[in-house]
Amino acid sequence: METTLYTAPDATGHFGPYGGAFIPEILHPAFEALRAAWDKAREEEAFWAEWRTLLNNYVGRPTPLSPAPRLSAHVGRRVYLKREDLCHTGAHKINNTVGQILLARRMGLTRIIAETGAGQHGVATATVCARFGLPCIVYMGAEDVERQHLNVLRMRLLGAEVRPALSGSQTLKDATNEAFRDWVANPDDTFYCIGSVVGPHPYPEMVRTFQRVIGEEVRAQLLAAEGRETPDAVFACVGGGSNAIGIFHPFVNDAGTALYAAEAGGEGLDARHAATLSKGSPGVLHGSLSYLLQDESGQVTLPHSISAGLDYPGVGPEHAYLHDLGRVRYEAVTDEEALAGVRLLAQTEGILPALETAHAVSLLKRVAPSLPEEAVCVVCVSGRGDKDMGTIAARLHLDDA
Ligand SMILES: Cc1ncc(COP(=O)(O)O)c(C=O)c1O
Image (cartoon, rainbow, N blue to C red):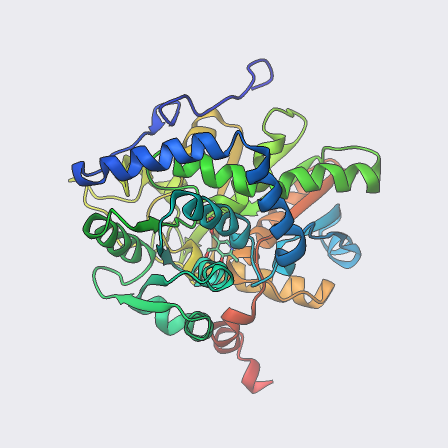
């Protein structure tokens, strides 16, 4: 990594061997149209000006890079928090959603579909659809409909239709299957707004492009705060991997910045988990080649995480590549460690993180002692914890206090 400039993906959407586009015949024209529209839009200043205006005036960017004095004292290294929890709707997902919906409008597509796990991408999509008066259908695993109920109510109030996915583990994988099925049935008028750096080319690179704003802002904000653009270490959680890629990618060619990603260790790596890179192997899911939790015959195995947004048996293809290159270090963080991470951030900094985010906080605590004493760390606070209060209250026995 020190000598080779990182330039992935190639023109066909490959990150090394990973990525590509494994799509059904019937969706070929829709994908051709999507690629052509994206290639055109990304070159146009007017497209980015519209996106930027919405991010500033509607989403609330730039989000702060907050010094975290009491968390720093606790972990023994200097820590800044990148506050994506302060984005409108409460998570980073809306950076991408604004971009994709603007693209859909340019393409003249009038019906928006999305999948969601934690409900944050669903809420972000429903929000931007309401802003532009577009009908929105969100697929969500039936288990997630239960555990992220607040977000289901938010989506309905925003005018979206939430369709529960009843197959498989009734979580994010199954919601994504249903969304693809819908698209296959309605390729002519429908835009599929994917919520992470997953799916067939061009989604992983397109979503990355919209989420890179996180890391780009960190560079500018750190320069103002510390007189240097690059931190020593960056931490993020990984479900599909969009907040992690968003904050990591602007630092990928900076060899002095270590990149750490927390995936869902669930109940432990010998029990139920969603630790795709720690325990998975290459395979195709949802249209691209990446790491996957699967059995010997290639059947996807059921993942588990306390956090709906990390409860996914795959991961974006760029993460598979960065893993193999050794450029990002991926570590599993268990449900219990994540709960401890929620409490830690709440009680040191007065910030209630999403359960997804708490995995990154917990990984910071684990890794900090191995970093140089003067190290400056940045943690991506991908979202706020309101949606998880039911689960957190039950697991931390908050009613008994
Ligand atoms: C707050 C939050 N963080 C992280 C994630 C994981 O998604 P990704 O890995 O694409 O950032 C989600 C997914 O729903 C989320 O809601």
